[in-house]
Length: 472
Image (cartoon, rainbow, N blue to C red; front, top):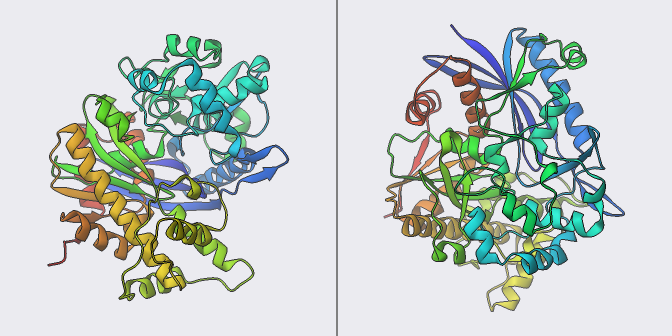
């Protein structure tokens, strides 16, 4: 028996609704709707337009139901850390974008209450200035928490609007900095020390839990049966992507490459060494209670922001042609620090790269092709170093690197990564996040069963990868 499920996959620049068909021996997905996810800057900062996102999701689900009336369930994943504050079931304004500048003073205020070393011991997370705990500290300082009675991460917010049920899915909640890395529960002691109200935070659920059936109005608007279930998946998109890594060898590292590059290994238990903290490695929740031991690298954001700047007031740029031109660059280019804080905010990325080069005595690129080659070389270098660091810190052997997501289509990046790491790189699938979303729903519905390894074997059969071997 083959059953259809709908995967809502929301990235930091775009979203999609995918239709998945699954049986014991079949796994396929196809896009039904794609839509932009464009932040909005207002007088008080940069925000996500979650109402437009929700409208697009509902329209996409309606289109999916028009093609496949018998959809068994819906799963939602998105980027991490951003959230809506609630009061009486309503949102208190549009959620802030993690690239908003408001968090600088909040980091200092949070560390005045709990030191970075104490935070790492409690939550196991790398320091990122936009982690939810810092954003919530900003809300506390501004007085917003005094009127809030709820907190919902983005996929949990959309699930609430679909079902009327408020929960927090555990893999995404693990990125907030407020879930204890040892217990997997909200850390009441940490919340108290950070002066964050415990009552804000909803019940935690694991991937595979049923959140609830569609509300009657939602069922009518989408054309779906009222019995259609919203299922908790690995709602942090990287958790879903890692589940869909088509690994047949346990000794693998993964890179989920899109706006960000999430580089790491899968562990059964957290790694909380001081060396890991200083290297800024994180322990985030994965499907089936695993740990995603990884490091965030500023990913294809560097390329997309550069292209956006070049297209401003000019003709559209062909990215494949630009990558071909970059591959043909023969002269050495600068390899820069992709995680320099100057690259975080939206803006003129080529100017910032040139500034970094001047500040660090590197040759400034002169052409668009040289800029792109510099970006791709720098990403490959950062990815390779993060793989080796993950292996060294965790003690895990790595014999192959899997790259999934949009970056798996970038042949230049994949080849340079193989060259710099000295390891084979297996590229694909592109839609790993949606595939992992579908797999959790399918296993919950009893369409497939078994371990992560068996699910990955199904992915490997259904979605062939492209292999890049080190040059020479």
